[in-house]
Length: 112
Image (cartoon, rainbow, N blue to C red; front, side):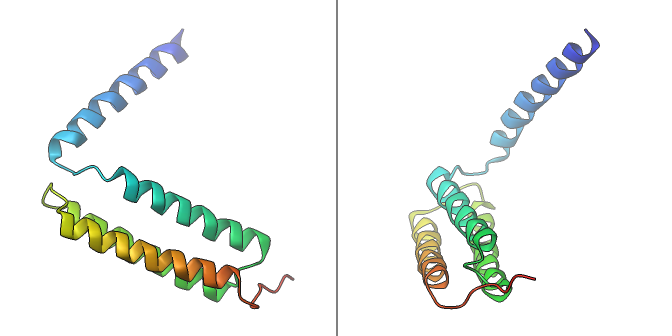
């Protein structure tokens, strides 16, 4: 019974924090977030398969960090404008091309 109470309390707090988070004014960007998750998964899969070297993975991760920073900056005032959204989408498109190029080049990770 104690585990159920703890779980119920946790769920209640999570729901309440989501509502509070939404009130802070963070603009939703579901397409951008989904694309970011997809790109991150592609990078991780490339590392796991050995298609990406450490150097390539670091560079691609740096691209993703820049996109996250731009998204955070765009959301900071509570509104993501069309211009900001387009800029982030262009950054994601360039990152997509970089990921594809790195996955399909001849450089591979050296396994030890």
